[in-house]
Image 1 (spheres, rainbow, N blue to C red):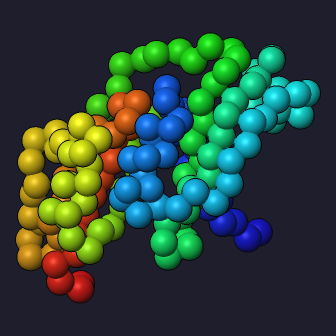
Image 2: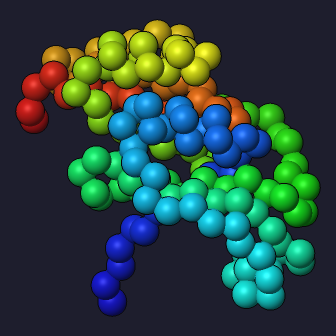
Length: 145
């Protein structure tokens, strides 16, 4: 059986702010829609499912995020995921220049949880809290392994 990762879906409280954050980091919006109806209820498992969605793609064409902002049922606020919580953890991106990426993130009020670390002489990396509390890892490769 062949299997391929299609995308990572993330529920957000403000679709436009989240799109702005990820597009400033370099992703591109490749589609937008509003979904509802019986098919959406069945697929997602929620009665009255109604959401605004946006599909974003990485510049290399290999990764996609599906962002969705619920209209109905009302979105449920929870505490943001912590790095050691069980379940969906984080979305990670490799970047050419972590300092530039962090400058962009800061324009959206997003800063590293603790700082930027260097893993041996291979990577500089950090976790930051993005829009809607999304954990985002940024990593800059320093040396090919």
